[in-house]
Image 1 (cartoon, rainbow, N blue to C red):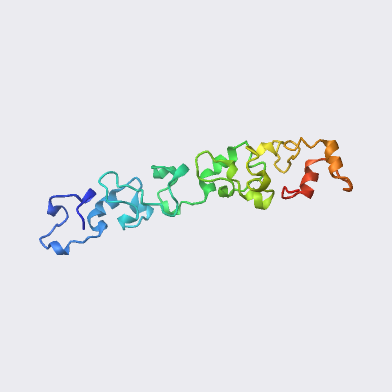
Image 2 (cartoon, one colour):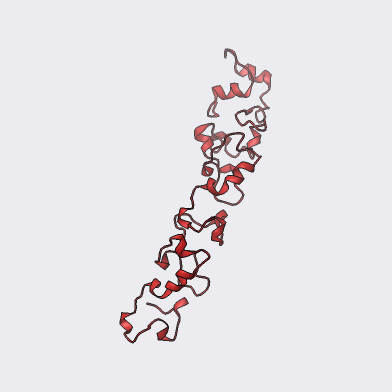
Length: 215
């Protein structure tokens, strides 16, 4: 049991309460039960926390470092917070949902560019966003498999905003190809598609024949 960091003590009786030194337990809780019981931020007893202190804490001497906790939900990038109550709204910490939407429902409801509620966007935030600060929409990888490849193939790196293609605010079911492909004039497009029955130079026509953006 190394007497280092927070255990760097010089008085043996700090831990060995009786003269039977070998009988002293090396279990953290045997020494820190009072700390566990009296803790209020967060309340360990009321939250049903483990009494195996090393599940959450490192033996550093200051602030009982919680950096070792949350292995199942890394507190990194946009989740790099030190105030437990920012996410744990009740004293029952284990009951807090790990679903993004449970914390970000207000972000989802209030965002207008694009309007998530009006456009019936998924509430599974990771389909569009990473945990990096800024909620970068260029990580919307689901778009490739479910709709049209914008993060791979010829359209990779050719756009910056959703509105580059979805020019009708409030209706992301509408889109245009012509904004970027304006160099293909209507006359040239008609010539390129001679013999195509019922051809019209519109975004929906482009998508009907080129659903993956290929020639």
